[in-house]
Image (cartoon, rainbow, N blue to C red; front, side):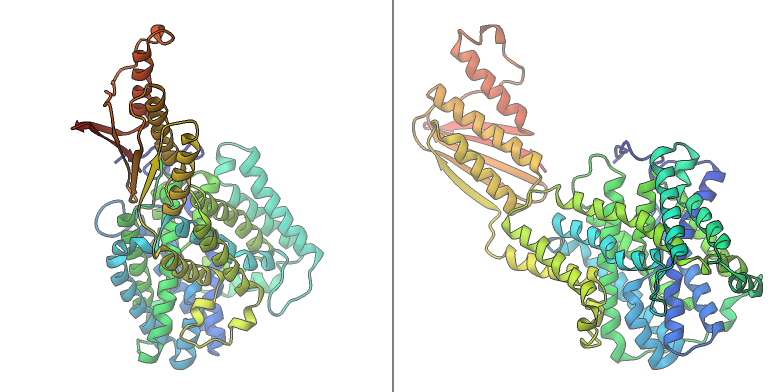
Length: 570
């Protein structure tokens, strides 16, 4: 079904761009992707590996990421969400990957990565049956936490800090601010090509400033010069091995990665459809399956576990370009760079301030998108606790990381980031609070002056419990109130009116029962010229308004008992 492109999107998911523009935008996304290449290097350093092993892991991870980006963007078939939602070296896999590399070297890392990708493919096949685990507010929380989780990485790099450097240098802060101001300025106040390539231009400004101020020196230039022009990394593959004791950590890492991908694909759905209502789980399942193919490719070829990239999704929102052709270009670049390490090393020497500024720019869009998804539904007290407590628990991991670092290795991936902690907490609380919550509700109201307040309270409280869309609940509220007021004014009944409301994710149905006179609901607006003198015209107008509120209406009567069924599409 065709979707309506939002006004802030310049090139939508199905639109094709000029070739040169596609290539430049693909290269821009590669620039953002390259930030995660630090993870393979960290893994090799932790296992005490060599520079050659680090280069191998980085190159193959890029090739696997390229395969994942292309597969994810496939618009038809059983695999791929069809969106610009590329893959990167997944931070969710970092802890488990280090454990495997230390225990059995790269061969064990590759074997366990392939197994986790296989399990992710199986998980994608049952995801649609787990819809109750992912109501809209939980999905929105995941999307927001995707951005919040990376704030620590973004801010430390922005200030030029890391584990071995705790001194804030003026030059690094200046470069970070210059890069961020350049990107934001071009994005907000420019048009055309400058807006589309704002991140790439801003990063170039950052590189130049870093070189002038000495943040990029001879050592980094020598690193590029010393890299091979061409190599075939597959010749360095050490093989595969497996360890059953590591299955738990890798499955947990896979689940955390998959839940993050659920949020990323949902964001892609929302930003590409101005009339977006809810997550499309079939599409998300195909996206998770594409994610698993990227992860299995990494395991087979010799790379790190892959996961969808929130930063790249944020970049697509910022630039207003979500065309899947950009994902194909990006995938092609990544595969190409995997065989040309001299070119890839340009990204490897990216200054930390440039990296931090680019992350801040991209992630800001993800955080806002997450809260917009959460607020698209009515929120009651229970859902407030689901969101609030999960958010607080997640942030606790970032505030006190040392406390959770001592947890059991099997569950450590859950506490490896605020995203995984908040997600697991939200799913658990959602299941707890769903207990005893009926999707049906009843109101008995006597037509009169106090009935509007009772109707409003009834629909508002139950709409919040169900997590229904505000506009749909307000339409139902208006229809019921209009009918009850008409029943009072025109003496359709003086007895009790029973209102039954039922809800599922796709429908809100209201059934009205009363003893009295049944009215007709005209399709066309009555002649309002007689509105002040003819009570029947007044009644017909009220009935017409009720029909206008509802998406479907049926009315029947038997032995004085009247039944009106109102349907509202959700």
